[in-house]
Image 1 (cartoon, helix red, strand yellow):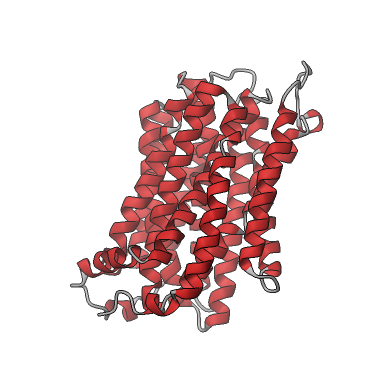
Image 2: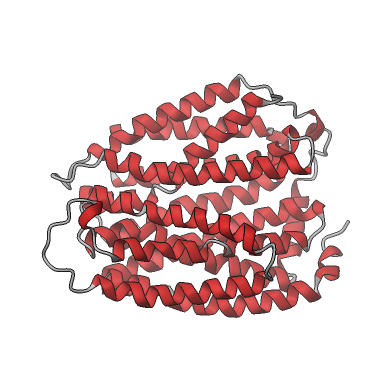
Length: 418
């Protein structure tokens, strides 16, 4: 198989970063237990991760070709290898901030490089689509795996124990392995080296021109709000399971994997449904169902009784039902991304992808910070009831986005031309 080594390397890279990125929920819970950090203070970890992604994504849109895709990925793997090794030795809250800043910085390099590399190692559109789907599916496998990997290092009998940081030895080992594999994998980047290296500001200027187009403005608002909802739930679900449902810490993190699994299933099913039904109807139905699930599931968190929860077998029903919100919100993000990208000429897809990553990261940070403060002030149930507000706003955004995407395709295609 051609390019098999670089393909395997890309899969491992995405698997590793799926674990690292989505460990923020587990780490938010553990820094509260280990370091005595408040909910609002712990929520800042999301900002260190997402703001790093946003900032670096903005920069790499112009510099990535000059650095090279393989070199960018090697730099990313080198950074996380070092910071993962530092975590068990320094073992302080400030180190977790540095860790997630490095994870965000590295993931921005990895994602842009991986997406660009796929075009270099595939022969046609069908192979490109196939490889992209496999990689994204492998990312979800990493998310699921991460929940069980982190829970395996948690000592439920001693919640204040810092033994959980030893998981980073394992992750550092995986990062080093990925680095060596990539270093020895051939990748022909000669075609991209022919592009101009003097157009550094071009990417910035085109991004700024694109973002003021009305349909793009509504799109980034929709993406921002969606990720705000998704990340506020994903990052705080382990804490909700632990502090509201009174699950052991390891089980709290394991059961949060239900959200990742339901999200993966939701996106798979949406790929079938969206071939036959208009995207707006599907997404509006999804938002309404998400709102219904919130109002039905959260009351089940009251009056749970005094039974000691020891495992999946006697966990309260709400721990299984609420994470199923991933099933209904999952189709929203990929669908709106597809709509906006199909409205643009191919030459603007890279710049638009940068905007997607930037505003998604900002939405994730905002959602986690708001949820953390509400969680601390009013409790976990109120924090998740808050999602009803952005869900309502999202309905309006989707309707306006649909109207503008139908009427502004020609104007979009004429935007940012040189």
